[in-house]
Amino acid sequence: MRLIAAVLRRPSLWVTAIIQAFRLARPRWWARPPFLPLPAVDYVAMRATIQYGDPKHSLEAEDLLKYLMWCKAENRRLAVGRR
Image (cartoon, rainbow, N blue to C red; front, top):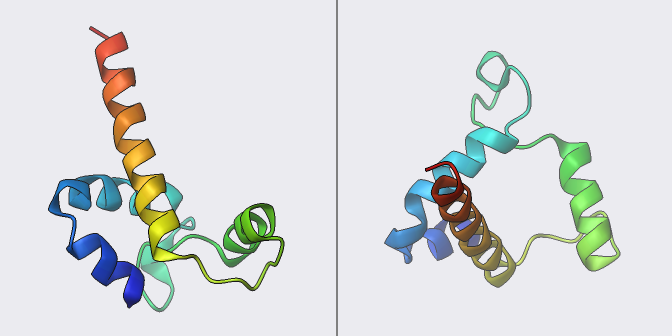
């Protein structure tokens, strides 16, 4: 809930957050509870191990915001390159 609250306080990242949620969603997320576009558990554990050294460490809000800002910048950069 704290991650959602952190993103909700940044309207400029809303679209990027939605795009990333669907990009990272586990395959056929709509066919299994909780019917949300969440990433696969093993992917989250791998990312937590790489970032924090612990597969059970929760994502920190500031890290999520930095990631979304990076994604937004990369999407813009790639869009400019396609023109």
